[in-house]
Length: 221
Ligand code: IPE
Ligand code: MG
Image (cartoon, rainbow, N blue to C red; front, side):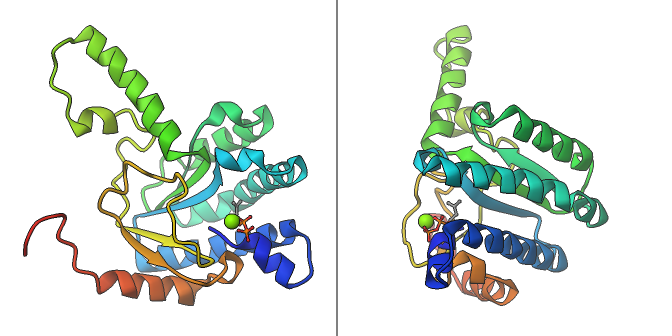
């Protein structure tokens, strides 16, 4: 999700106003995903690097996140949505972690769409923490031939399928330390649309573009 700040600035407003409006886009995308039967939708909400933003913006974003997830619990239950937060949760406040635990706990048994909010996440952090765990495994089992699955198993995304499609908004064309390992064969769709303007129609267009791609996974068809 990118372009909230620019969206607000274009309207002569504070950056946070763009974040508030961005929550409405998350809602719109989720609504469409439920309607279209998409099994997993992930949102890169806050990176490890985003901690370097001005403190006031970080605090507002964190408060917004807690408030927004609590406000959606009833919707999640109604639409059978399982809600997950993945990332370096040790950096989040106790209050936010308590809200996350509460929403994750309540929706844990839901069997429909899984919504993942990546919070305080970076791909390199994930690979490092997984590599550390894998190193412990190797210490217990020396000489074991290491396979990609041995690392995948320790990523915070363990058990979740790799993404088929990445959508990046606001005209930026880079991966910005998102799911580096998991996106080995992900299709990328870039759009100029700023995140607060990214609603159902933009989502549909991105899925249509994805549907037209020929995925070969390095093989020949
Ligand atoms: C994306 O919007 C949201 C977060 C990273 C939380 P930005 O805040 O990056 O908006 P721009 O890129 O400055 O417009
Ligand atoms: Mg940005």
